[in-house]
Length: 419
Image (cartoon, rainbow, N blue to C red; front, side, top):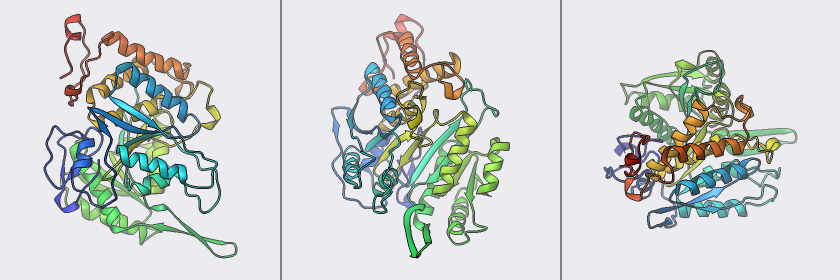
């Protein structure tokens, strides 16, 4: 789901995850997955036919390291329980090897499936020729936009309440270009790459996202007072893009002041647009404001592919295998993935159960002030779905349309399909 040809942009009427645009009006019945693979793109790539079998979707699953494998196990348990029409192709990447063979295979499977869900993938090798696995995935698949919707959980005690910020981060360049060299002994230079084309398409992505989600303001975060050419280009591109969206307020803020303002007065922000490194910093700051790394999910979008993951990209090695990791971030990533695939009924079913578990019953892991174990939280989510629907889940292939989630209260209502 991503911005298409810039001069011919059209967008879905409702953006459940993020704006998906094409150069031709797409039928309203197409899911975001279908739109992504049946419309023109901004950049030509060598494509592999997508795996899609009889209404079911094949999805690449990259468990990663640390708590990733156990959290992926929880996602599979929940999907199995509700009968979600998704088949996972599990690919394990060895963080210790000094080659990219595993990563290239993972990229091939995502190209084949079109969609992936991942934990954080470690890169333990310090060899200069071994790239970061996470960065390689984003760059090779040209997933240029990263979206993280940061919304308060009422059941989690925090200093600030009712925060609702969307972070949109340029995902493929900036300091993450991984271009470094030692010009002379003891002097290392690192290149920060900012291009007009990528700045323009992520800026349009941000403004379209704001427009389709009823957002009122876009704030561009930068350091153009020091990096006058690179950040200056990004800022100037955002200002020019803002002129095309007169109904959306635009302002800008220097990154260091932005972090202070987030901690002091976070409600002034609505949509935040920034380059790669600043996005990594700001997303972690906001996650801290909302309770920690275990709650929010992130979405990587390109013209062809989408990959979903926990928002802060933390591995959690120290708590792996102790049954205390917060599974909510990974479960929220799976909800985003279901919506992208067009399975809105299944997504709403899980989302409602997560909301009740965290915000009503307040069954929480220790990282957000609770005492429950990881399995306690997952079992509570499954029990919530079972209590509301019994053994019948109103999710059928022909019923995956966006709707306001309803909770059946009588046996007669339980027999109806989700429309």
